[in-house]
Length: 449
Image 1 (tube, rainbow, N blue to C red):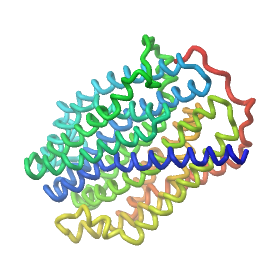
Image 2 (cartoon, rainbow, N blue to C red):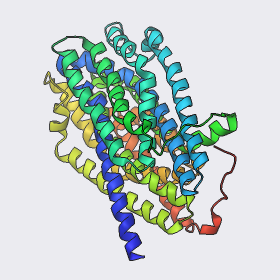
Image 3 (cartoon, one colour):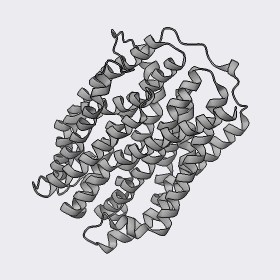
Image 4 (spheres, rainbow, N blue to C red):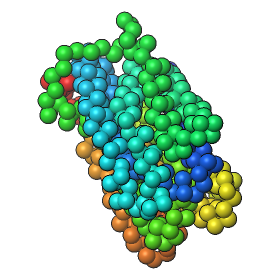
């Protein structure tokens, strides 16, 4: 038992560390855009970027829903020694990724209609239209890259999954500089750099995916509505998390435009982009532990499931406390990285926001892992409602209330209050439930590929 514990601990440490590094690199997609757009275009560019980020978040959320949902079913099928079901999960997820990616490209020609609805005025709208017009033609690449990364991780190649994410991130940084400065392509250049990055990630994964020894194999597709629902349900929390961030960002932008105008939106853009990095690292912990929990669930190993959950919870709580501490000690230095013009008013707003907003992370770490645990063990509906409640429904209600009561500080405190309330609810639920016994696992699903 002690040897098994050490083996699980070392395996979890490897998966978590590789996925955290990969997600940290992946978060640099938008962070690099923020830095270089700030340097090249100043506050108007930051405002435009923050107004279009909700759409990017929805695109990323759809990709993660497909990748995490399909890969979870793949891992459970592997744990149950059902290779045909694993192949079907991979094949059907690729097909859905191409369909969704193709539909998402339609956002580009509609960007002129969408931007005014997001609050862009006549001075900001052209910048946002240029960004969306260059980004969304790469929708299929975003979908395929996320799907392949998730499946590679679940197929036992976490190092390769990390490498693909880092290749994309580093290329995005280099292309951002090239397109924005020597070539002077402005917002369209920043978007093109972000869109080309997943293409390079796919090229990194392709040799292994297409190799004869690859654990990923295609089969004759047979999609039905029931199979699509079964395939996507474990990925719904990932979609909810990303989509909720996007919708909350759009809501916050609207509130901040009324409270502090474009300057408030620019300040929120700085805080939100730094928050994306911290959230991505917590997501990396959840994604790192997911294959281990799903395989143990497929094998009906209750002890391994609970041990993996405990490791992930402790890791996420440590990360959350670290993020909060950094935000209290170095807020001006961190926000100053994206205030190239040294605008004092912008700096003050962003510094205040950093200190207040980042108090959410110890609670967020617990919530992210709890939702991932439920999704990884086939309880997608529970994970979906928990994620939707904590990341959108309560946040939306509190943002409207607290912004009226306390103005800008109320906006910054919305997410911490929501995360704290749901962490307490989740902890109470866990304490009130007895640990699962092996006999309570559902039987293998024979006909749901």
